[in-house]
Image (cartoon, rainbow, N blue to C red; front, side):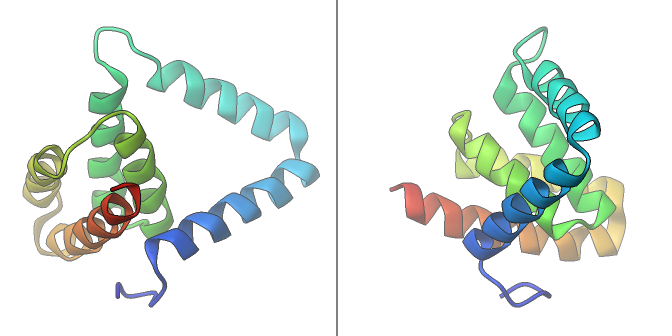
Length: 119
């Protein structure tokens, strides 16, 4: 397990539950954030899968396990393969150094767990 000792599915469920709680407390802010999220991840010059892989690499460098779980999940939904993830994590490791490498291991663990659930 990763540093927080919970499965990727557990992290994802907890994150989504907490988002709902925050949305109930701050509906206008969360609606605006999700509009931004939807617009920025929509296919444009880059496709959705590529954008999610970029978001994953940033999540690794920023050291956010819940963000990692969220963007791995969304990248899988957008068609990302394990090879796609490995390439993105190599870039994250380059940009994040040793600590980036540690969080890249969290990400590949998440990838493997969530890919197993979809097969």
